[in-house]
Amino acid sequence: MSYVLSIVSKFLKSAIPGVSTRGAILLQVGLFAIVAALAWLPHDSDRGPVATVSQAVLPVIESPIPPPVSVGFSTIEVVVSRNDTMDRLFRRFELNLADLASLRDLPGLRSQLDKLHPGELLRIMHHGGELVGLERKLSDSETLKVTRDAAGFVSDVLENPLEVHTRTASATIDSSLFQAAADAGLPERVAFELAEIFQYDIDFVLDIQQGDRFTVVYEEIFQDGESLKSGNILAARFINEGREYRAVRYENAQGRGEYFAPDGRSLRKAFIRAPVQFSRISSRFNPSRRHPVLNRIRAHRGVDYAAPVGTPVRAAGNGRVKFVGKQGGFGNVIELEHGSGVVTVYGHLSRFKSGLRRGQRVELGSVIGYVGMTGLATGPHLHYEYRVRGSHKNPQTVPLPNAEPIAESERDRFMAATADFVNLLDLPAGPALVAR
Image (cartoon, rainbow, N blue to C red):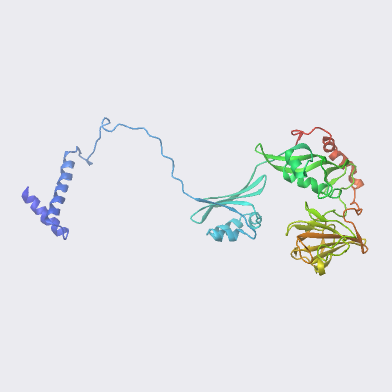
């Protein structure tokens, strides 16, 4: 045996350069241990050694099947900012631009990807920069979903239907319209729209009094059984200083919604009373007012609306820009011509709407500039004038011409479509009365 170990030791030293005598001996011992173990195993004449393990030695242990190993991916949730595009987002998050090109090649998908809206949420799934999936909410009831499979990208629009319920609410004003609306459980948006509807007859800066009352019939939109948001106001009643005003929404054959009195008269006027929403009057029309800067009697031929710098200023009516620029003590000024000799003036503006120019057409209610304190002004406010053939009129009391009523050809359709909502104004306010 010693002779054999000596031969093996010499062989290992020659086969493995640098191995020591002690190392060679240890390798020999390991080798013989393996050979001895194999010698004890039973042999099959054809297949060689066969290992057998008794059931009693290693009993079967039942265990749950491990879950499949999933390929990990990352999810990016991004709120779209102004001027964001899909191309910019892919570059910002280092995503594969070739994947974006593949998405745009899908039928009908380019238009759903190329125009993003500030504030919307996008969900992007990727694996190491390779796009795995994308989700974009197209509307309250539709979601675009893009997934990737072995063949490439697949897109689908998932529908989650909305339920529209009609509700009514009533309130009495104690301190403000918005507080009364909140006390009645109305969303703030409904209060804003209520003021918009009656803005031609009621100045919500000046005319609102304690004890005024209102009733509103409006849509509440649900999804999956949960309230999502408020919809359109369908009918409204406002009692201001004992005088009642009523409005009902009517959608014409072309799908355009507008508010009318129940008899078909349009609630819209050719002009709105106040070009700045929910500000306060700091100085009224007064031919004998003492000027706060010049300290002498100087007629105040308009109304001053105090508001923070940057508050939007709206066109009081449809018209054309007569003047835009600087004008003495008025600072930055806009003058609009409205036809029939009517001109409105907007002074002390901080800036004009981008791109506004002389001769440009503007629509009633559109933003034309922003409140400031340029020129002779002691604080930020809008100076607003209403002139008829060069004569200054009090903007708060001048009679305003009405817009066109319901066309005779649509009167029967109008009466049939609005009757139920008008009747709801006289019923007690409560939970949903109509579901559609």
